[in-house]
Length: 184
Length: 159
Image 1 (tube, rainbow over the protein chains, first blue to last red):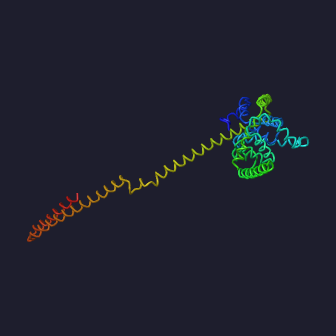
Image 2 (image 1 turned 180 degrees about the horizontal axis):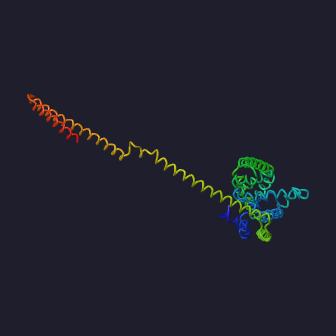
Image 3 (image 1 turned 60 degrees about the horizontal axis):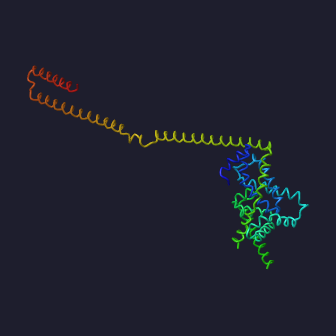
C-alpha cells in the first residue's frame, strides 16, 4: 500500500492527474504481471492492462476506499477485463498459439533471469490451473497480498482463499513433479 | 518441497512491463476525461463524507448527554443518599442535640435545688410553730402571721 494512498485517491477523484500517475506507477507493474501470467501474451497483456487503468481513471469516484484496498479493486477490474477479452477472442486464438507467442515475446525478459527454464515451467504450470487458483497463486506468492485482500479481489471469503491456495499448490506440485519425470 | 515451489513462483515477480509502453499508456489515459459517472460518484463521496461527519458529531452529542446524566446522577446521589449527610453523622446536629440534653439536665438540677430549699424552709417554719404554745388569742394571731410568713417565703422561692 502506498503512503498517503487515501489522499492520492481523493485527489485522483477530483481529477488530479499527478495523483493518479503516482497510483499508476505503483500498481501498474503488478497488475500487468497478473494479466501477463494469465493471458501469456505480451501485446494482449498490455492492451488489457491499459484498459484496466483507463477504467480505473474514469471510474475512480466509484471506488470506496473504506470497503476494500485499491489493489483489490484494480485486480477485480483486471479479472473482469480478462474474461471480457477472452469471451470476444476465444474463437480466434488457440491455447497452443498463446503459449508459443508468450515464449517468444518475453524472451528478452527471461534472458535476464538466471533460471529461465524453471520460471517458464512454473509459468506454464500456473497456466494449467483453474482461473481462480491462478489468481490466488499470483496474488499470494508473487504480489504477496494477504488472504483478506485476495478475498476482496476475487469476491470470496479469506477461508475460501486459503482452501483455493492449498489446492493450487497441490496441483502445481503434481504438475511440476510430472514434468520432472517426463524430462528424465 | 513446498518452499522450493514458492521460491520458484516468486521468481515470476521479475516480469515487468515495458517502460515505454507504461509511459505512453499513462499519458493516453490522463488525456481522456473522467466520465460524468465519476463526477456523480464524486458527489456521492462528498455526501458519504457529510454523513460520516454527521455520525461523528451525533456520537459526540450522545457522549456529552451521557456524561451530563452521570454528573447529575452523581450530584443527586451525593445530596440524598450520601452517608456524609446522614443525621447520625452530622456533627452540628449532634452538638445541638447535646446542648438540648444539657439544658434539660440543668433545668432538672434547678428543680431539685428548689425542692431542697423549700423543704428546709418548710421544716424551719414547722419547727418554729411547734415550739410556740397557742394559750391566748394573741398566739392565734401570731400563728396566722407565721403562716403568712411561710406563704411569703414560698412565693419568693417560686419567683
